[in-house]
Length: 158
Image (cartoon, rainbow, N blue to C red; front, side, top):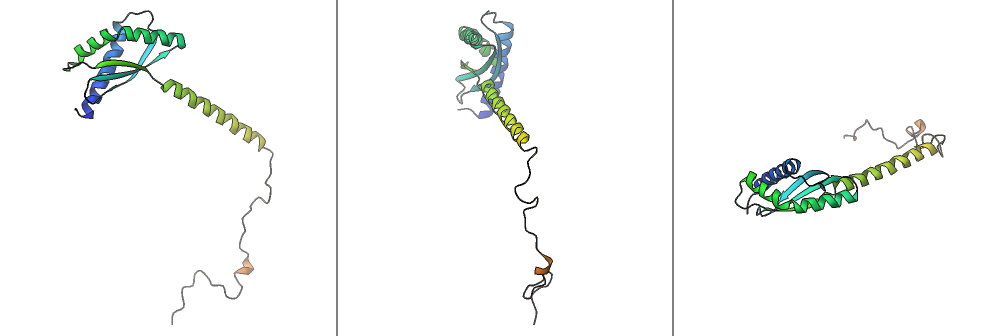
């Protein structure tokens, strides 16, 4: 087993090598606008998972996934050549869920903004149900009643 720092460094290097190789060497027409977002390597440095996103519709995503699978051998040999590790990790390509999650969050924020605007619109001409200041205030005559103590006085000393 290796330490996590070495695995992280190798994962970062794999991410760069795969992205550069896709940009320069792979000329598959099915490969769309692919962005390598992350890479993770197992603790034994035997398997690497490469996360990617594709700009486009579902058809372009499927075509890019097929192109990545067919280029897996070339990419793995390039990773082995440029990293210099004893055992070149196998590559697995996984579509990154980050854009879908971001789209969901954006939709939820949009709904919240519209609901806030609706509430603001309804409350524009509204008035308070009771008084403007609903809290009780101490009356001055209550402080003068017998048996009450002044806060500034301490306990009586004998």
